[in-house]
Image (cartoon, rainbow, N blue to C red; front, side, top):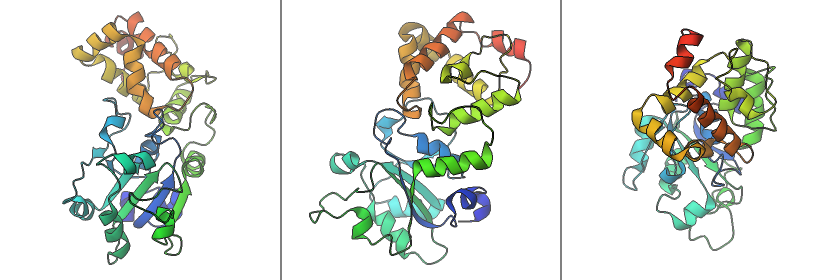
Length: 282
């Protein structure tokens, strides 16, 4: 893959954007925060992702291409697109038809240079293929360390990216390791906002001094830019927001965030113009 397409990949990963890379993120499949790696990898330039579709709600904090893999088209998808990220868990591999696509791994490892880029985001370093009887992990069975495959932990890459792209950010890592919230915090700080003690402090968009940043506009456009979603907000209340935010938020303030977003929308009577007219153009 052309490295110019992934301008920060080399700085964070430390290797060229080609061949196989494995990221271990224990949040995958936990029900909350399972797709936080997507936000990080999207920031590094990856665009094509595949995972169990039921993990995703309709709200997407970043734009990306969802790739629906079929056994007969997997290799073609990888080679034609130039890169692919597959996010999966051990449970997915055991019980779901959307399991590990071993043909993509073989293609990546054996392809002539330049190698296509394939990233596997797994929930455990001991991940092993369906039908494996010797107890060896995927990493051991394919000798991936010996082949020089990069194996990383999500938290390490997250910290590297934060230091590189969001230095001096006020939001605590203990609140979230999803870069979407840290990007929002950086935008708010640049706009003069000073409250960063909780995730809910980032979402107080009805406050008079709140700077309505591009990231927050995107969130509010989603909830208030469609009459059907407004109806769901009115009918289901915070629970609707919680379901949409759950894939992107780890254990912690999911419900508090949902209540804050819903309450703010209720205060402005589900009319985004009440905020945008006050805030002016983005």
